[in-house]
Image (cartoon, rainbow over all chains, first blue to last red; front, top):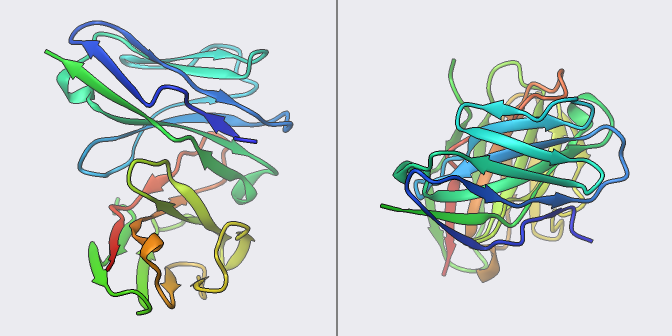
Amino acid sequence: AQKITQTQPGMFVQEKEAVTLDCTYDTSDPSYGLFWYKQPSSGEMIFLIYQGSYDQQNATEGRYSLNFQKARKSANLVISASQLGDSAMYFCAMREGPGGGYQKVTFGTGTKLQVIP
Amino acid sequence: EAGVAQSPRYKIIEKRQSVAFWCNPISGHATLYWYQQILGQGPKLLIQFQNNGVVDDSQLPKDRFSAERLKGVDSTLKIQPAKLEDSAVYLCASRHSVAANEKLFFGSGTQLSVL
């Protein structure tokens, strides 16, 4: 079974509009965390946002927010006021396992977001 | 603070040849990951080190891939012999690993083309 599922291979959004990128996950570990990374065409992996399984509030970082629904095992990324520079691949990732450096980090297949002027 | 260093940036080899990639993580980061990213796909974990010990190598094709992190700092990933399907970007990442929300820091990657 897939640990991280991103069902949207590609998405289009109008500049200045908001967009939601979907991510569902599968784990039996009570302590886990979800990351979102952005990968522009240059190839670098840029960290966007993190949500821990015990965090009481949804994470926010500037224009990025994470819609965390624990019971549904979903951790969708919301980008508000899209900009042309947001065009990139977006990856959802999950850390799980015992603490410290023994935690495994698994990535989804990604969603390619294109922002239209 | 220096980032994760990887070399070479690009490598072109013929099938059945051998190749090695090098990674130097951020100073003080005990956890080091090697990921394989095939074009259009997400990164796939090949091997994870905690200091100089292997934590997970369940997806490493051990008949042709090997990796080491002898002194718990820099690491080398080797492929011998290479196959066409090994064409990918090999990403090295490191993590401090103390706090649960510690993110992975990635290097620029090595783009491998096997002809």
